[in-house]
Image 1 (tube, rainbow, N blue to C red):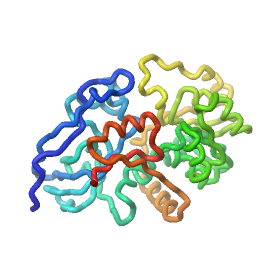
Image 2 (cartoon, rainbow, N blue to C red):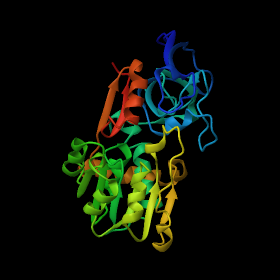
Image 3 (cartoon, one colour):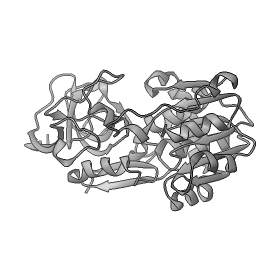
Length: 339
């Protein structure tokens, strides 16, 4: 067996952020690497994901996922190569999708990893379009929002990893119109020219409510919410009767230190008979098989496109996370450890 490395680096949370996370809230630490015991595998990570939900786990509050522990490595999706195995069914050289991100080497029980095939898709895609990100878009649109052919769909944060997939999936399945919001004119152009959105706008160029009404003069039927705040308020105003909203994320308030006002027009949900439903991708594991089949086919045919923003180097992992929170990514933000 090839000699194992003596140590590897991990990003540890060392303080709970107040507002925007700061470099002093985390530390890049060197830790020993040990041989895996029976039923366990040791993986050298090649890519790990940074996601908006990780900001919530930095807070010591009760939520659907437990908070990150202080002075312990943070967690997140990762893909890597098995370099030592004490588990039947996993061999050195296998590629594995798992949840031990934010570190160079991860050791865990074999049942916590899923083998993936690098010949079928780039390994990083299993963190995005073929992973939790893609499943979030798929389940949120088709299951939670009950999308149907002919719907008008509005997506906030539409140039991000989830939003860009939602809009394209809606078009593939027959939406009559898809509108997206993004934070730059460059991203607006990307939405219409690459991802096939019918209309898009830069939310920094004017009130979201006014820009959405211009883009959807006949109203909207589905809203996929990644932002919250003024975007949700605008969607409530533009909804047609029996509109449906998937509340996936509210990145506009993740770093707020003051309470965020609820939409001032929430009463519209009564007369319009709206359905506003929160979602967690963890509740939709039953869709994975159908999701994989559909998305694999759309990727193969060219109907579905995806982009990644790749940051190189373990030492730049926290900067990548902050950049994602600021909206500097196009598509999925990924940290590569392959160099």
